[in-house]
Length: 460
Image 1 (cartoon, rainbow, N blue to C red):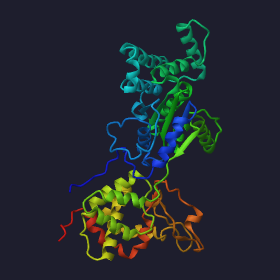
Image 2 (image 1 turned 120 degrees about the vertical axis):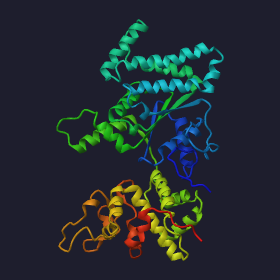
Image 3 (image 1 turned 45 degrees about the horizontal axis):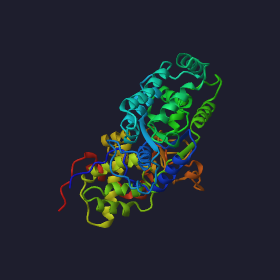
Image 4 (image 1 turned 30 degrees about the vertical axis):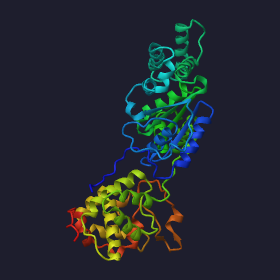
């Protein structure tokens, strides 16, 4: 059986029990008043793109190239035939002067390929369809002249548009009106229909581009019959907005953060926070089981770890860790006894974890195998304070946090009661509890084959 390496492509295959939430949000999107903006919030690697693709598929959207598998929820959702979906990868257009223009162009492209739209215009002519589609592009050009102007400039632009095209007094909402009329003309059921635009990777754009796109949604696309679904890492996007909004010169960092947060809330009042996996170990076991000997490895991992929480609750990181496991599992022979197998699994996991997520620690360890003794001491709380209460934390661990179930101070309170870590933080050293549990079996010399990285001899 060939080695299966896990990729980071979005998938329609629901392995995390999202079906109930997909059904609920699908109904919400079809029934909510429009215009409406729904935010799908989650950390990088939490599965936002897969979740949004599954949601789009449940609404009748077609799977795009690069999206794997079939959806297990597609039959569970009744979707309206009056609804069309559009997908927009925001980061691909972050260098454009006006991202909202790129969005309109992408909407035009995808509308032109939709069978429902073409069927509607078959009653008229291909020329009529082309003319209507060109309406989106033309309005985009008008908007692009100012690259998302402020409200005052929008008013002047609208007045100019009205005088040129309608010879009547200016109206500040003229561009929105024209966009709305064009979209209604393209929707198969007109006023009864709606378009759902999925905007992904907004948090990967540079701050100015992300802000421009948010401004564009607020100024131009806040129109009936439109629902926008934004996939974002909320903290990253707030950091981007902080760099662009106007604030008093004497504002504190906390005040700036709150202003940016309130700005985002104004645009996106309806948010769904993607839940962390209920069990990181369960998902990791599914990934291990995809490979040859995977079932055996999964069983050994389960015996070794038990109920210990020792893996990051992040889908992307768990996939990457499973890939490293496959590499390191081949560097040491699989033992016979159950207890030896449990220790084998812990050693393989530790080497995989440090190699994948902590390059600086891995390089120190690779150069000096005895550095592992310092890691163990740190995980066990022996490198935080000396007998006199002086902080002696090592410099190499300054940016890291233990999951903190060790005792601190006089031992009367566990560390997590003093500073409970956020499970979504990327600086948590998740395997520390496992290190403490297996300390007596984790000698430096036992990791040498893993540090060398040579494949072990085949099993007898």
